[in-house]
Every structure is written in structure tokens, then in C-alpha cells.
Amino acid sequence: MKEYIDYQLKGNNTFGIPALCDRFIEYAGIDELKDLYARKLFEGKWMSIGCGANLLFCDDYHGVIIHSVARQVEIREENDRNLLVRAEAGLVLDDFIAQAVDNGWGGMENLSAIPCSVGAAPVQNVGAYGVEAKDVVESVLVFDTRDGSARTFTNAECAFGYRNSFFKTHPEYVVVSVDFRLTKKGNWQLRLDYGNLRSALSPQFSESDDALREIREAVCRIRHEKLPDPAVIGSAGSFFKNPVVDCAVVDRLLLDYPKMPFYEMGEGRKIPAGWMIEQSGWKGKRMGNAGVYEKQALVLVNLGGASGKEVWRLAQNIVDSVREKFGVEISPEVIKVSE
Ligand code: EPU
Figure (cartoon, protein in one colour):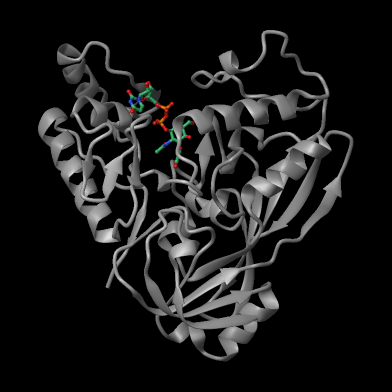
């Protein structure tokens, strides 16, 4: 276990926003969480972070931040068709996906290059190109900070929703490891129908031994074209969720905007917030040191030296514009951390 006092979080959030926390603790698994429990750490103010890819620090954090550095991968079960692989929370999700693809384990290739830790993947139910964490998570091992016990949540108990899960509203559970059910060749269920994924693959694409690698490379290419690299331009990927509205709302909007894209979602319809933000004139705009990414309006960026408050102010202005123009409320996917 490593502890740092008055720790600078600039390198621990993909927005690259400076903020201090009173104490930052790197721990290496459930035994060290038990030590922290014995030290009564969870009785004070604390939070757990992974890659900080979904956080906006608007103030210094006067509490303890814990961060897993446990990165083991272990095959728990295996048969001819599939396997159950346990990955520890501190592993970078994309490093795990790279291993899976190299080994021919299918299921997560569409989630390539999402900046995220394994531990955060089920909390946020991360998703991209037609796949969500919920499609591959079999169970999640968590530590209950209220009584120091361990507990396993099945997929159903995780209550996954769009960028949502039981854990999102229950931060008292810290994810220790995630068990993923992945498939072997012959049982892969490749998902190629989302957006422009199929057209990003070569015309000769087939379910050959190389298929997972080709999909992974295509996804990385599309993401690279549309989304900023957090190592170069600070961002948290999509800043807003795509709102799901009543069918009647879409019907009303289609009268004025016949080209508006939307997706059927069972009960309602999802409208791409990026489209509404672009139509509201925000794409590529800047306010102080914060801006709207010029290639994808759903992404807010730190143009250099932005504060969390500056980014939040821009976000509020965008929410107001979209409400005024479309009568639709969009809400942040990013979590604001403030006093
Ligand atoms: N669009 C615009 N203008 C824009 C951006 C998008 O008109 O500036 C339109 C596009 O033309 C398209 C539609 O909006 O018709 C959807 O765009 P896109 O496929 O780029 O996806 P998205 O809805 O903007 C979501 C996820 C992304 C994920 C992609 C691909 C959310 C909040 N975002 O974005 O996830 O990578 O789909 O699956 O659901 C993230 O969560 O951080 C993230 C990057």
C-alpha cells in the first residue's frame, strides 16, 4: 500500500484538471481494503477512483481517495466454447481487452480504447459500438465498506442500465474484480452493425482467426478519428448521456427536424445529444479554456489550463441551449466532484 498526502490529481483524471486531495492511497486488493477498514478509513470522507475518465474535479477533495493497483488476470473456468476470466479492478480495461483479443477470447473487442479501469467498467456499464459491459460481465466481486465483508453480485443483481448500474448509486461497494464470460472461436458473436463499424472493416473481412484483432483495430481507428486522445487533449469522452424520451417527443421534433437521428429503445426513443448540441451551434465553440470538441459535440475538452468549474459552466450553458431549442433535458454522464 502506498499513501500520499496533499496529492495532486491532475494525472489521475483524463480531463487533466488540477485538484488536490488530502490523502491518496494505492492499494493492491481485498486484503489491503480490509486493512483500510480496520483503520476506520471508510468512516470519514472517501471515494474510490479508477482512471478518472468520468470525473470532473471542481474543487480540491478534502478526504481520502483510494485507487486499486491490483491487475491480475486469471482463468476461472474453461470449456470448448467459452471461458470465465477474472480481472482485478486496477487493470486498465483496454490492456485486458488487448490480452483477450490476443488469446482469441471474444466479446469485448468493440469496447477497445475506452479509457477506463476494469473496476469502473461495471459501475458505469461502459459501452461502445453496440456492446456494453453488461453483455460480458458474469459477476462482480465487491468489498462492502460498511462491514468489511466481500460479496459477489450476479449480472442481474448489478441492475445494469444505459451508463448505469446498482453500484453507481451505492458507492459503499468497492469493486475488487470482475468475472467476464468470453467466447472462443466458433462461438464468437461479432457485433458489426453499429454505425460505421462495418464500413471501417476491410471488404474482405470474415470470421477468420484475425477477426477480433481486425474489429479492435477498426474500433480504435474510429475512436481515434472522433474522440480526443486524453494524453493530448483533456476530456472525459462523452460528457452527456443520450436522452431517452417519449415517442411523442420525437414525433413532435421530427416535424421541425425531419433529419433528426433517433434510436428505438423499447419504451421510448434515444436522441443523440451530440446531434442536438451541434444543432444548437456549440460544436467547436470555446468558453474560456473549456471547449466543445470540433469532431464530436458530445465531448467537452480542456483546451489547456481549464478549471473544473469552467468546464461545468460550459456544460450548463449547453444544457440550457438544448432545452430552449428542443425542449429536451440532457444530463451529464460525467460525475462532478465538488465541496
Ligand atoms: N452526431 C452529430 N454531431 C456530433 C456528434 C454526433 O450529429 O457532433 C450524430 C451522429 O451523426 C450520429 C449520432 O449523433 O447520427 C450518434 O453519434 P455517435 O455514433 O458518434 O455516438 P454518440 O451517441 O455520440 C455514443 C456513446 C459513446 C460511444 C459511441 C459509439 C454515449 C453517451 N456515448 O456516442 O461513448 O463511443 O456511442 O458507440 O452513449 C462515452 O460514453 O464516453 C463514449 C465515448
